[in-house]
Length: 392
Image 1 (cartoon, rainbow, N blue to C red):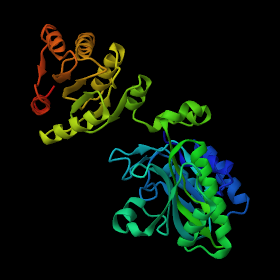
Image 2 (cartoon, helix red, strand yellow):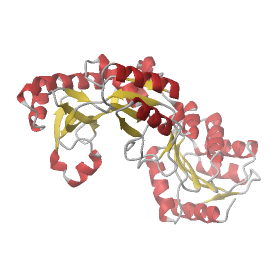
Image 3 (cartoon, one colour):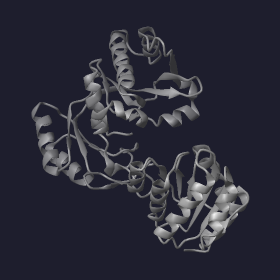
């Protein structure tokens, strides 16, 4: 689960991690009031920031630094409601429905801090780099040696000596080292306490008066841990998510919308990835990632069909099932019932293997519906691509 920058900063405040003062606004009136309060408090610079779940906001025109109230009003008017396009939103962009009106900072240096789970080592890793303000993926690709890492032993947690090592590698002044240690220890505690999967401070800045501040913050949470955090679950902004993905989450379906024309329904994430690959190999493009899981029931299958059919780009449906926990005959009966109930008019191609596969194929053959069944993944993928190119 993702949250907005202003929400992430509220969490950091609870752990005594320094962040700029600011207010969230959903209307121009609220933005104007927040800007007036900041200028009245003696701030010479105010920053107007679009709040969307994507990076690269500044490059897309979603961040404006202003020095007068009139400029703040103009920036808020330009940004609020705009369709902000960044490298992470895709060409369709994301509508800006919230602003963060924030006090400016006298920046001396821009650095980077990040915490993430490293699957290769099965440990949390704390990262730091002097290349703050840049896309960390670019830094990792071009100059990986400029990203410093401290791996955290699960039994003992992040230690002050590790924070000091990172602080010295960032080239901080000796007067800033203790601040940096407290800053990093607070970040780590916030990461663990909230069951985060990612916490990034980019940029992590030093100011002209030697203070350390989290100028921007990104936090992602582990969906599987949200039952422990009802307060955090309430931070979810459904307007920032694809409507079909939101609908799928209601039925415990793992769905991610893509931009192809062949809808996929698969049981198991690994098989889903292989299915998308073989569709690409056959000359087509997947319209989604949809994993119904090993224990899908009739209701889930029907809801899965409804979600797939809600995508206007879908020209064919490719169902690739390896029956184990989810028996093939159960899946086949569910597909038949759903296709009849929803009056599916586009081609449905299936590849079935596993428990009770012959019974499943018989159910499809006796249904009276025009299913196409491939004996191999490659054959089924070719049928799906051909059907999609044939149109609805």
